[in-house]
Image (tube, rainbow, N blue to C red; front, side, top):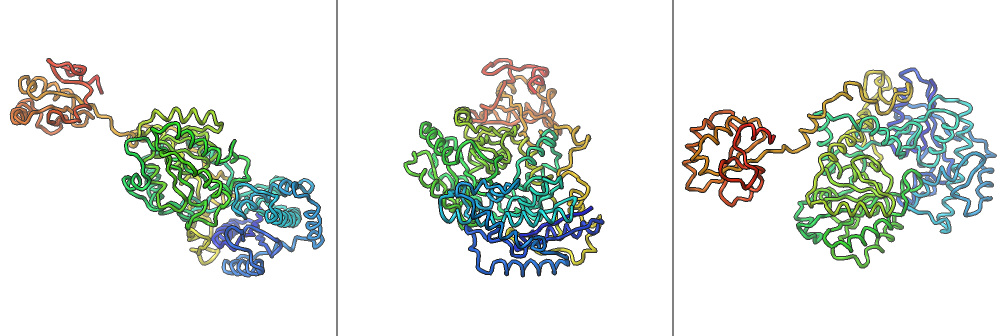
Length: 621
């Protein structure tokens, strides 16, 4: 089998280590691998974004030197993409870009090649803008530069694909400029494309097949395959443990954006929230990466959705609305800043009602603390919706995203439908938790964080682009040496699904263990009166014969202090001091826990449904 590995972004060392390790593993399994890097062909590419790092005059020289050194370090033979480019094609690319009118740029086509659509996402990322104003001279110049580079890539990759005729293309990301060009040209030929990107946990990768790494289809497929499969106790421990790690900024695959957790009282005091009222938290999304992807496009801009939510809170002062701006929009933790979005969002801050509270990207308020105190989470694209639903909270999605349209989230893209969802949420108590929502969200979260990603300890990655390899010779990368590499090569060579479907045994799992682990035990609480039990020990014998210590039932006995010793004697006479006796507790008159009782064990009183037999007691469980 022939595999073309196209790797133009190896200045980001972690990605170079990943795909060179996979490439060596493919060779060890008998594949013919051709490894191709960029030799300074492009006037702009995603290695240098203006929003992050200005492109220096010697950018390509630096990049070539670094990527060649990395290939040598990994013992990876390579060739330059420029070998497949005809010099005349550079002139043709310049002619074509110069011929385009400004309003044609973002939809520009060269024959059948949709170059404008393929490079658009990179222009969004270059400036970190959710919207592109092509009338801005700098945006126009940059779009033309990416179009030139995209067509150069198309010329060279088209010839390379024809000459080599690979069975599979292995490429980083598939979203950015020339990697998107490579993906589209390969798919048009029926060549299978495997894209790789960093995973959601440290030391993991994500893979997609015939889709860019940001495509939503894999999430839908994950739910379709595993959504009805209960989690085992081990799987529950794994996902609950990892979600706890994320709250503390541990074991994440990328930069940690949220500040450290705060105590709930501290959040209430810092934001001026009124206690006892339901807290709704609106989490904005850092969306410039997906702004050009049609399957992520909402029916309306984020700013309109936020404005409508503010006006709703103005009409409903009984709720406390917190608007948490995503820290990656522009903070000391972010990679660059979406200045355009920050300006637009800041305009919404003017004239906020007293029950709307603003948390800016750099404010030291943890998103996870907000999830804890919130009764409702309002999201656009953000994966915070998954983490909040995994706490059993109501989540309302207003735009397509990782969890939109899944059964544990309320999805309402149309404004009227969104307002109806807000109306419905008004009935929720401040501490509302839905255990069915939590159960389903945890199933998806386990798939998202554990089933989809590939464990890849052969490369020691960090939150940034730096990494080191944990192997010394390609001879170590043989079949069976590492499960993660075996999985990657099976996906590339054998067409194995990225997420394996559940087995018949997994589909047949009993959901009761999962339910018991997640749903708090519902105890039967029965009221009794000390003096009546003292006078009629047979009532205590009914309790003794009705339950054991293993049953979720408690007899709550209203006991004046003067009756305590006599009650102890009556309990002993009824044989309730033995091991295995059902649960009982003496409570002082007026104790608020007495209100938890749902029935009364009595022959005289009927303040609650009255029970006076063993069968009547058992019927309540």
